[in-house]
Amino acid sequence: MIANTLARYFAGKFVGAALAVFMGVFLLVVLVDYIEMTRKTSGIAASTWLVVQTSLFRVPQLLERLMPFCVLVAAMSCYLNLSRRLELVVARSAGVSAWQFLTPALAAALVMGVLATTVYNPVSANLQEQAQLNETQLFGDRQQMMQDAHGFWLNQATSEGQTIINAASSQRRGELLTGLTVFRFDQNGRFSERIEAREATLENGYWLFKNVRRHSFNEPVKVEDSYRLATSLTPDQVRGNFANPESVSFWELSEYITSSENSGVSAAGYRLQYQKLLSRPFLFAAMVLLASAVSLRFFRLGGVQKMVLGGIASGFLLYVLSKVTEDLSKAELMHPITAAWLPVAVGSLAGLLALLHLEDG
Image (cartoon, rainbow, N blue to C red; front, side, top):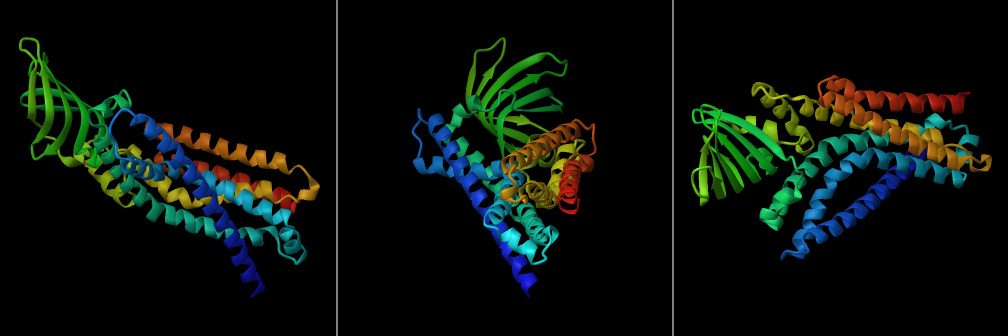
């Protein structure tokens, strides 16, 4: 009974610290993003509530990348506070080993990781999609200038010739494009015309452009409310080009992988994202191991500040490793399973070895 009560106590302390860190980071990022959105919308008539809503919808996906660090900081904070209040000293004197009061935090981290993958990720993906729609409503034609200079590119070939489509942003998994520039070529490969449009939607067998300006060599500029461009592309083929793997829900990734492979589009990004989400619970557990390795030292022994800095540095190095493996996987130089699980294995082994050295000599 005492062991169960103590385990629930340590688990509750860790979960409380994790929620506090997450909410603190969430509020900070929302505030920064809202200030940035206010600056961007200063020259246009925009609803304050719509700006606030857009910031709230954008932040959850940003926080997905910061979740492992939130767990790391939360675990360090939890065990440092327990050590400062001598609760760990009392637990050790009662015969409780470090592994016994570490296990509840590991179990809680695994549960949090499962919830982050199966619940939080789908919600953040849907909110990100809504945020993009809000940005389109806020900025309209200005959105193209605010997006990345390269945007999204798509190449299609029909009986009329080749067409290259560049879009500043995409919504609905690529079925709605905004900020478009289209380059058309005839069957002999000669440039035919350039089309600029505010948005385009994929219909059955054609793209429907709105607010169109058509430029060609021999004719004056044509301004049209709408324009149809024939296409043989299907929604599955389009979303393979325009859908960002991070914006796809965990429950939809398997379908995207299958449809991308059937359409002849590389599915490396989707496979990597799927494996990253599967490994997230174990990554959280690895962060707890790293944090405990640098935060179980008694305050009276000194050197706590150096160990905390060491924990932060190890978390940063683990992040760098994950980014390197991610880039290698996207370039198809490393298998997605290896790229997703290597940082987890390195972090877990490093934390485990450090704990074995500190606790068992």
